[in-house]
Length: 141
Image (cartoon, rainbow, N blue to C red):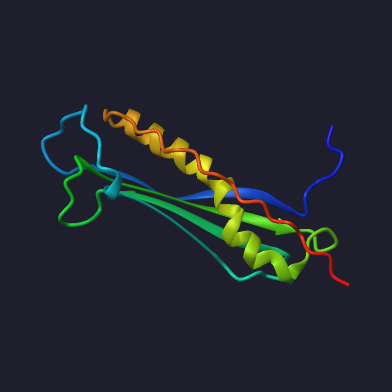
């Protein structure tokens, strides 16, 4: 049983893109170098009328033209977050979206990446866990 619900909640996740393509004759035991892996996040402005904001998470591997990766892979998702303004200060939403929301979406990126690689016959990589920063909400006077 929940005793208290946090002031921001993930309402849903949408898949924007799941793509994998072989770049050359496959060697299914080969994995890309760390430099080939790019993870990025971004967020929308807060919609105060609907009390929501979006956060996008994208992973790309081997998408550069000069890539040496055995494959090109793209995974992109968008999380829809709702805000209870009585529990969470609107002034801190941007900071929370930049620092905390990516860590909520990251496990979904990890799972999609792993599953897509397995289903495509490539040796899966397990993306590393990330250390989560803590956001202390400031009380407004």
